[in-house]
Amino acid sequence: MKYFKLIFTFYFTGFVGHVAVAQDAPNQVKVLDSITIKSYLYLNNIKPLPAVQGTYIFSGKKTEVISLAQIPADVTNKTGRQIFAKIPGVFVYDMDGSGNQVNIAARGLDPHRGWEFNNRKDGIITNSDMYGYPASHFSMPFESLERVELVRGTGSLQYGAQFGGMINYITKQGDTSRPISFENITTAGSFNLLSSYNAIGGKIGKLRYYAYIQKKSRDGYRKNEHTNSESEAVILTYEPTNKFSIRAEWARSTYRHRIPGALNDSMFAADPTQVTRSRNYFSPDIHVPSITINWQVANNTKFQLTTSAVLGARNSVQFDKPTNIKDSIVTATLQYNNRQVDIDNFNSYTTELRLLQHYSIGKKTASLVTGIQYMNNDLHRRQLGKGTTGSDYDLSLSVPASEEMCTLKPTI
Image (tube, rainbow, N blue to C red):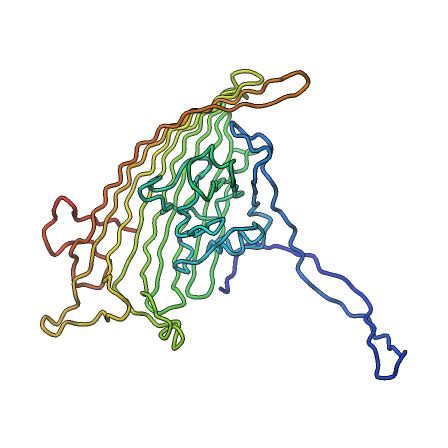
């Protein structure tokens, strides 16, 4: 991917030295002029989480923190191989090649939409359905992130039962030294990439705020492939004292991906840019509202109450047949075959109460965390609807809707 970004990063170069080369005659060498070898010096900005953070304990656990501001990664396209390059054991693959999702796994698990991870944004669960369909359809712009936190092994059990661990995307907080600040990141690149990220933030009295809106459009490297995406968020934090704060957040992400279809091995060898489908579309639209209360009850006691929801839909309309079946005009009707319409509605609600207590045994200090989590998931899957014979993104049905299927037309 070739791209241009309105952000400048500087790297340091390598070293200067002499090279001695042996000649044909024994015991003879010739000293050449000095040469300069230039290389990029990527500082290893991967650090562990502190022993205790908020109401969570990480002491002795396998944790990593990635500072996105300090790594040379293509954050606009969410190029996971660059972002997670320094994390041992992490497997990343590009499912659609358009930067719509982060497909990541650890310990050899399935990276499909990160569904082996407990996915969080600012500590808020974003998995569409924790156990029935745990994929992360919610996808925030990486321009909005300050860092990424990973917790694996036994330390991740305090978040949930996912085998892969927990991944937490931490949003920027804005400039708290002034009432208002503005940030713009505009990226243009190959395959007609155009992305614009705009954010405002600041602090007014005891209120901190941060809000962003991002829109991106790009083609894929294969024919007929295209993506439109947009994301928005508003974060308000009211802190009447240094021991109490309440944070309200709403975030949304949606995209529409025109899918070029699968290829078999021989087709890929002949032309990897060819397509087998031109009428297939996939589009999730996810909202994540939340409220978090933090209270320093006493010097050694912290209390946190979080309530959040994942609301939205995952929609697709496709000619969903094997690669060797062509999506062609039916001679009897002079139209395409009917496509399949699938709609999943997510209604997931979570409330979590956590209490951290520091205590001493003799001269030794220790920490104890206890808590309770309540979750109510309602995943309504409506599958195998008989769609239209058209070519545009259309979730309409050619057969009247039943209890399992109805018409739903989200727009971008």
